[in-house]
Length: 199
Image (cartoon, rainbow, N blue to C red; front, side, top):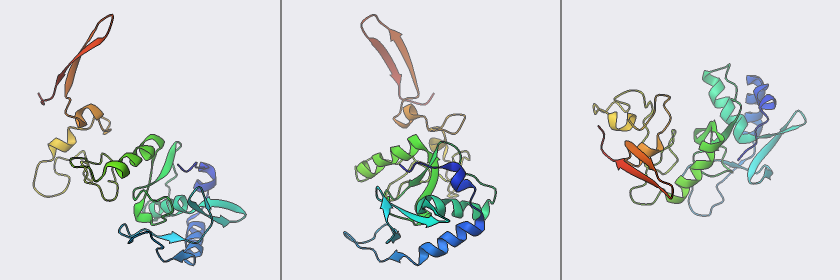
């Protein structure tokens, strides 16, 4: 988890973000392993804090991944600021990586939950619930969960959309096939009747 000093990052101008990116490019190094670079991760020889590389700019240290994620977004959305409570997630699950394609801002709990995908992505039947999908996972999430056909393949994606509530947040019960339940309180325990079919 990268602790974000929001004002420090949000106050950076696009010119400063580009300057830092230019500085970082001079320190990109070949993939050292172990194994092949199957995720197309990009790494540097900058020193790191708990595995996350940092760069110095105007006397302050910045996490490179946060800077490059912010730069990526501001190219198309110049007024974007990192929301309070958001962290920079590595969808490749490699905290040393600075490939902006694998970086996203999202809430702390969502960021932490990505570790589950790294553990279980090779498990038969496991689907990543994140958007963007964790690298190497099979996902249940389309690019736009609101539309009925998210991937333009002429198939109705209602089965994906129904996993989300009215605020477009993943409903974890529906993810596991629970569409409704009745809870009866007992003085010793609770009885829960579950319906696993959409009504």
